[in-house]
Length: 376
Image (tube, rainbow, N blue to C red):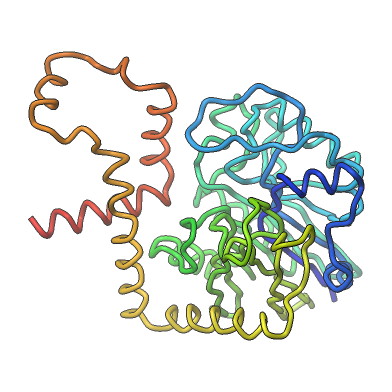
């Protein structure tokens, strides 16, 4: 049997930087015991580790951790880092290469990226006579390798993922796919995300874990497989207290040749203190209640559709504001006669690119526009 702990987003910011740079332990005793009670441990490294100051052009935040975190990082006993996410290229190729160098110095490994035309797309984890394959892919948000001269995150290309599963499913007993996707703050998947994850199980994956939404998400057992639609964060310190941002969960897998067991273990991260810890008994009750509610919604098509439309309505004003801030007839006429593109900053064009290229944003935009059109 192989036991593997897989965590969600691990972003080295604020107190996490301070603790790791001063070689302080950020795991509580109870969390350390659970974390280390596995054969292998995997996290999604959300921030590049680099001292570079050269930011890429993008919309949204630029995130990085200084190389001073190296010593503290090594003590966390992380075996594999997934690098397929929307921040890994925030400081360009230099940031990626620096990150990989730090990981290798820590005696760890990585996957989910292309490094100077070399694909690190699939890792086989082996113990005894059991083999588990793992791969990760990111939404298309200023990080995929096509935009950086063949260095960067692997995109969520369904054909590529399908071919990868077909290539390796006879070589390993199980395949786990990590997807950096999901709408921020939504504990439920979008309709397309739901279909994609279930399809990956149907074509041979044993488990699909979604990260990126920064909230604990629904999970389900589907067609002998396991799907998580959001693990929250292992660490992403924004100096918040007692919010959904502070919650996350680990998925512990126990793999035999023809069997897979899963355990969902809740955690709190940097919630009033400088550590990652397991939940207290009263917190477990609340945590389990939240997940039970959203898990039940997944089982009912009408409830799921209702919650999706409610989320779309919640986000409607944001997306319309981002796309149509010039909605005056006179202004539109002026724009038809004169090219005013100089009024847009480069980041403005990047924002529009992200809204339409990123499948998460484009799906909700299409739903908003469809709903608006139907009401006309």
